[in-house]
Amino acid sequence: HVCGGAVIGRDCSLGQNVFVGNRVVIGNNVKIQNNVSVYDNVTLEDGVFCGPSMVFTNVYNPRAEVSRKDEYRNTLIRRGATLGANSTIVCGVTVGEYAFVGAGAVVNRDVPAFALMLGVPARQAGWMSRFGERLDLPVQGDGEALCPHTGERYVLKNGTCAVLGAP
Image 1 (tube, one colour):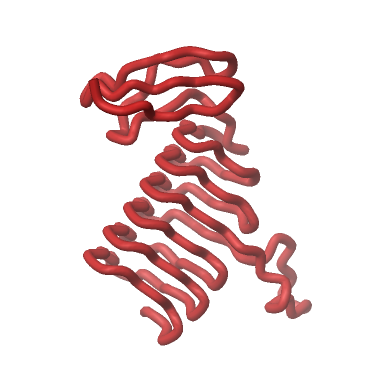
Image 2: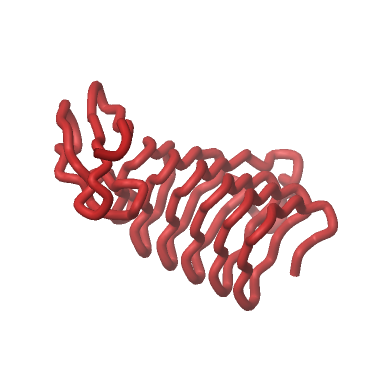
């Protein structure tokens, strides 16, 4: 079900039993797999992948007996990010460009661009390329690596990973 106020870009794919709220923005080329609810105040930039049965929240501390519709927190999923099957994104966080949240992980804080996040709560386990390949970089510190598939060069400096381009 897609609510009338939702904004959805071109070439998107929505699986079975997907719900999209009124105050949702979905970019171009987004894939939302089966059984995902995208609640109000969630923005998915271009090229985001939402795996089957992954979860967004929109209220940090819900109670059945307390109305908190005016307390929805904004959640931003940046370009090219992957949210694995059965992962949970707690409201109010930003998931960086091309970050990769593993299946079943629970994200409760901001995620850097290109970060690989695993576990409950999610912890950074490495770095991923735009192609979705693990990069040979330390979690912390500085370094350089090539994407094993594309040959793109990535640089890690002061906790920030950036792509420098093709070989």
